[in-house]
Image 1 (tube, rainbow, N blue to C red):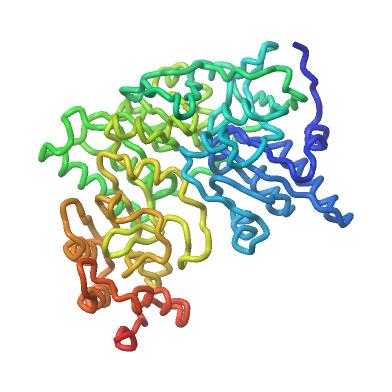
Image 2: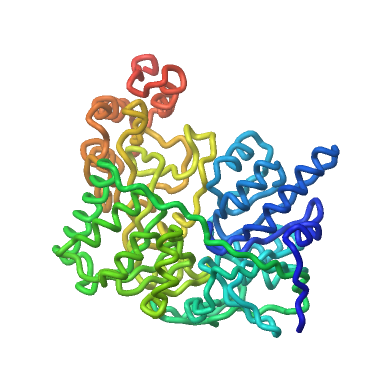
Amino acid sequence: MAYNFITAQEAAQMIPNGATVGFSGFTAPGAPKFITEALAAIAEEEHAQGRPFKINILSGASTSDHADGALARANAINLRAPYQNKPDLRKRINSHDCHYCDRHLSDMAQETRYGFYGNIDFAIIEAADITPDGEIILGCGLGNTPTFAAMASKILIELNDRLPKTLLGMHDVYMPLDPPYRREIAIYKPSDRVGSPVLKIDPNKVVGIVKTSSLDGVSPFTEPDAVSKLIGNNVVDFLVHEYRRGALPKEFLPLQSGVGNVANAVLYNLGESTVLPKFQMYTEVIQDAVFELIRKGKCTFASTCSMTFSDKVEEELFANIDYFHDKIVMRPAEISNNPEVIRRLGVIAMNTALEADIFGGINSTHVLGTKMMNGIGGSGDFTRSAYVSIFSCPSVTKGGLISNIVPMVAHSDHSEHSVDVVITDQGIADLRHLDPVDRAKAIIENCAHPDYRPLLREYLKMGLGQTPHTLKAAFAFHTAFSETGDMRNVDFSKYL
């Protein structure tokens, strides 16, 4: 089939106000870059003329400033799901200029196929190559691309010449049957493959191809600071302790790691451990730290949804792709984050929290319980099904004005039933087999900052019952910060 090559502006003009559009990719890799910026320009022009222009955007996870950022600044997003991390979009969400549906990433594809989000009008897919019969070599992130391509009425392609065709073979494109016809997903180790190296689409749905040339634009993470290093050391100390006492098999278990500087610090520390053996990963994102661990031979294989590498590392990957070709596989989000596979493999889940409460509840998403930060992402997918679930965060932020260990989380994303271990720069609280009071004591004495331990002990003594909360004072830390700017100013006497 002969495709129609067009400009980004011509592609954007095809997408009308009110359309529902599925974006390829997972984080910045694989996400569209040029059609979305052209669409933002159209929205600004329409708004200047007094006409409405907003679209509904579905994705695999976050995108990039070229997509979520540009479209948010143009106020061109009506509905966004399932995850985002751009400041401009965050402002729109918290001011109610954009409807945001925060979903578990593993659920999104099935929900889309079941029609939860209505019809998909367009899919915008970044590709390294496309054949006349509709076989696509995808880029460095899969997300929900197979589902969006199958469901969309029309498809637009960004054909990116910075993506080498030698990526062929690094993808495992698989879309399971939906219930009640689904069968087991036959992944028994991270390197197993169940699908196709290419995405197969109906070429007749392709209404235009835009030639582009761009890396993913991921900024390198900053070097771990002192607090991140302490957290990383504590995570590794916990894993070493578990390994030495035989609570982890001698072969070790696959690791999952969240995104960010703390996660990178943990991975760097894992690479330095002389006790823990070589390991594999079954995760949703691999970052620069994993690239180094693979190159050094510490990580022998990584199954992921996205290679979220900084531009420098992405160029190194492409220049040395033969070495990495049989050590990394990229899968759709509903497979990389699939609870069935996570439970079978015995994945060790390591995720970050905004705050944790003394009984083990975790807030991953909302600042002071009301303002959305990014979203739950894949943390829930891994947490509930993991062999052991670890959450980490600094004990304090804003120079000690905020304690990230609180009496009760102001927004609950993960209940204490799913959280095995809490780790901060202060230490480790292993919550397994502990009742609520003992969990609280472990978290207060091992994870809370010394400035806040007396206040948390005081709160614990106030309560009654099996989980001794005092509802009147449960959010006293948050109230003190809202009123005075310092959680240390809490006065529990006024709640007695």
